[in-house]
Length: 493
Figure 1 (cartoon, rainbow, N blue to C red):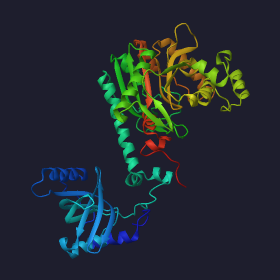
Figure 2 (cartoon, helix red, strand yellow):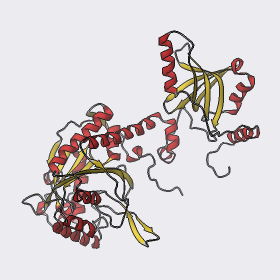
Figure 3 (tube, helix red, strand yellow):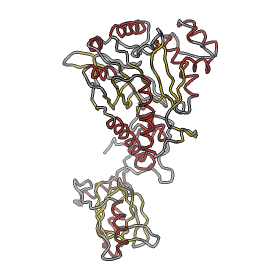
Figure 4 (tube, rainbow, N blue to C red):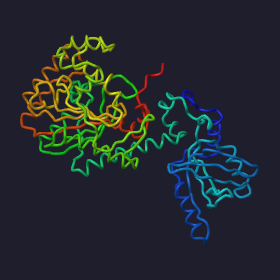
């Protein structure tokens, strides 16, 4: 056992002694008739009936507490449904079995217990143990019950331990599962078809992000982990589906922050014969539906601030918002150099050698986004940062795009999809020039996607939302790492 961190030698000695005695500390099977919650309910039903013998149950779970009082011991075991008290009497189960419980078992071990239910004088449902068995020996002690697992990095690195000792963390991920189910329920009930598209892609696209690169040995071909589902889902609109969505993982080779993880969960949907105004209404309706399903309310508290998700959400013109919050009119600064100078003049610190699109993103993230506490859609974006969106009628440099913000955090992104193949080709070429100029997040030319568009794509609205950020919002968590079971962390040296 050398080399397994955290193993306690005393526990290991007990485990070895059991093996020598012919007892398997890790048996393959166990009998269970009731979960802890079902056993408690069965006792209540028996008491309500008021006749017959109390139920005999076989329950299983992890030993959490142990309190010995001479020839009797009270303990608690917990399974996935909750915890239940067990009671052992030496006179009832025999000296040998009682001593085996006291000396061979430790807090953290998994037990199987059989016995009759009763209620103690304090009113606690309890199993009077007739027999028990060890079903999995814990070789490492759990954290101190009074201090728990409080080191944040340790919680993320050892999420299994975090789940054992922190009930609220277990509840959080149950809530996350409900959020995902509610998103699916809304889309399925509104005629959307769930599909799966490639994770390994020969050309990445659909977002401004750097990809992860891998290599297929047999084909001798570099492939990319997808950064978005967009271009494949729009191929399906071309193919004749009118409403499609995908809910899954995307991968972006970018920095880690309280709002960013290199691997994250996203939902994207595309709706034929809809524009960004239709998608705005659908987005606020869907998020409100999810909140009602999961929280039972459209009001919530995030970071101490009360949020009301009730539609309709506020609509705010993006260019006007930038002017109001930063004092910069980007329409009067059409080139990168003049916009860069203006940002520096107000004390901004954008990255060196940015593109104009990066500078606009900087203004949004630094000066506008933090002010958007109540649900707000920023609408009508510059074409510089929207290479896949359709131009606003009558404009050459503004597109029909919106982003949704809640609690100072971007939640979703959507637009009326560009369906003109010649315009799309020109946008890809412009993005290619940005890439050559050093923008590693610029979109790449995707000739097959252009070929698909050339067959005709109807007017379409598209939408993308991070499930992790939605979970942060609905569970009042300040960091994306809190809502991802196994977040990416820097390797320990």
